[in-house]
Length: 408
Image 1 (cartoon, rainbow, N blue to C red):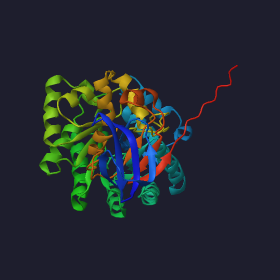
Image 2 (cartoon, rainbow, N blue to C red; image 1 turned 120 degrees about the horizontal axis):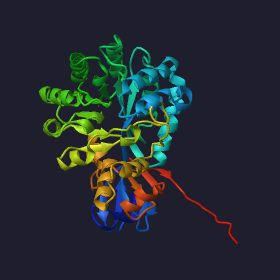
Image 3 (cartoon, rainbow, N blue to C red; image 1 turned 60 degrees about the vertical axis):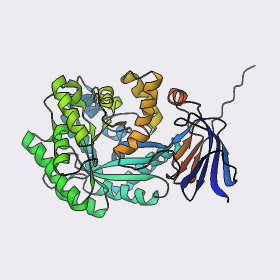
Image 4 (spheres, rainbow, N blue to C red; image 1 turned 180 degrees about the vertical axis):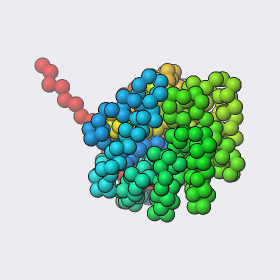
């Protein structure tokens, strides 16, 4: 039998040794000493081979808009302890007055190709779906989802960025977006003016999710206000509706300000709901208590969040870069910490997107990267481009690095 692809001499972190990986019909069929031949053979030369990277939080309809929208929103979002976060969102929403499928498509396609270059094969794309954005972003991202469906998985999340109660009519656009093919129902309940409206926001979005059997992903408590409790509200709703393991909360930044007794209650609810937290410490002054959540058994992942938009002027859709930056912010610098960070951009991130079996094991889909590094430490330290990216059993990217010193 001739395999489609064999990656030889791969160092596998979960095996702790050099192995060959045989891939046929899109799946990993053998790990070990592979005697058969393949149509394509790649020599990893002892370098690290792992699951491909996963980005569980990206505002894909807004990428590369920073030069257009400017820095005003950024000042409010990054100022102090994020007391002006709501104002930042209100200012940033002005870009949606210019939304059009054509330019959103081009910007998002550029970001998708960057993701592939850097070894990312799965993206959760939050797409603004409200009375300003209408369905322009949804149309663009759904088009790209179809174009890249055999290469990169895009989970499109219909996202009412400006609220549901405070933006009458947005709920109808979310219904339409899901009917058009969006994969998940989004939300941002903390943006509402009262706790009652925040709960109603969650209830309305769950009504859509339940009707179409969709996962739910919301941005919660994204401001410097310790009284915000929408992460708790979301977890309670997930438990009540039987949506266990189907809900993700992104940001939850106010958690950093919670008193310890309340934090421990919240951890209990998160675990009962089997709810993941996606943290993006690099895009705001506050962040979820990542280390504490992990130690208590909550699934935590890292997301890119933004790429050169109103909230963050940088970003390359490069998850190794995200891990590197957050190693500093979170003071996660030991080898064990680095392994955890790496899991947060691979297997833990996959769980946060409800992607099953994203593990480098026999029988699973072959979504893997051959890194230009011999360890997780080297991978995060140098963030070199993957030498090869294999998606759904196909070689989709090959990177080369070349430096010439002209020194006498």
